[in-house]
Length: 329
Length: 196
Image 1 (cartoon, rainbow over the protein chains, first blue to last red):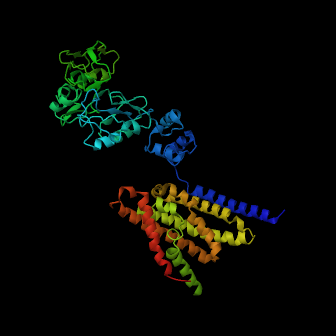
Image 2 (cartoon, chains in turn green, brown):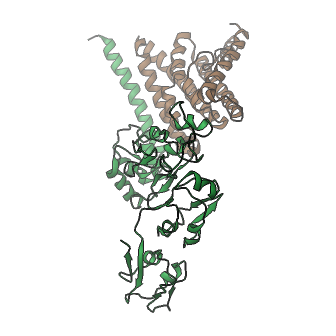
Image 3 (cartoon, each protein chain N blue to C red):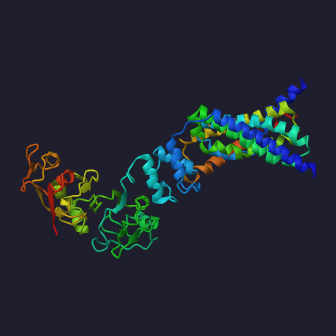
């Protein structure tokens, strides 16, 4: 056999072996204690190092998850199964973050608003908006050319015949691309659990709004007064809802004279406290209108005259069947 | 004395005249990737200098006593690469143990020193230039210092540029590349500094 082969194999093998031993010793000497959860998460991950999560590889993703820099559900390959297992390791319950969905804060379609002029330029909201704010009577209104639809990577937005985008709640992931795409800034990300939305963004005075749009906020402040938890405030002639405070009672939607406020839940007809009540006073403390009276450890009572049917007491009550809620419809 | 003169000349010429990044265009990846902050850039430069110096020594020994002695020059690439990879692995372990902050700051670019063409370039240039052991080590050190110099200068410029009024189209990578080009032109001015 040609000695070159033997020399090659021996020399390369020798260099490799020496380096391997050196590195092996060094790894013992320079061993770093790592969070054992990182190794656990790494074992669960698919290990394809595909980078679809946006990190350099599975180990970087594992580190980021443990440090709380990314979502548990960040691994698209592993999907829910992996996310659940990671949640187990971290000791948290699945999805802890509030999921948000895009909400259009305008109901003024072609039917509800007036048209001021003809526009024959490029058919995008951005272009139309740059020319005198579009062709609609309300300068805050949705232009309906579908910039949000174009921006949506999940095909969750379609434009209705009325010229308003319809956001598919199932498809929407709350990524916020439509929010930045909209030149009118009338799309917001609202928590998925919230059922009340004030569908108007107009800061025009009430007189002007009532002339140009059938469903605009006229700034009557009825909702502000009706809200039991002060979640609605007036900001420059527009009622604005604070989703953090809103308790999904829907009272505001019943008061709104222009049907600007949308409520997707069920309205409460009546609330009654039964004998199951143990007198913990939780409901009493929670009631925004002081309609509940009663001593500690005794059955409480709701003053039906004062009660605004917000249902907050039923939500805080921990005892089964202590508060019976009857819904309208 | 003559040898000292040669060593000094090799050193100066690798740092300035034949700067690895700005004249030979080797190691551009970390040059653009890790030059956002002076501090990180400096650490990256130090890590690379360390690897370069060790590589120069190790590859000279391997090349002279194994490859040339056994007449196996065709194994240069393979053997140099495993030596470089092992050295980088070692440096990575060392930095991870001694300075977790630095380890985090360097991130992916630390293991990427392995694939840094400046290092392989250095290892391959040594047998080509026919340096002896001392000169090789100085050559490696000089290359590393030249690398550090270029990357720190770049980081300083980019830090200042953060506050600059850069046209929108040029923001980010384009302006960085323009900067790199201007710096390379500036370094061409050193080419007449000394002649061996």
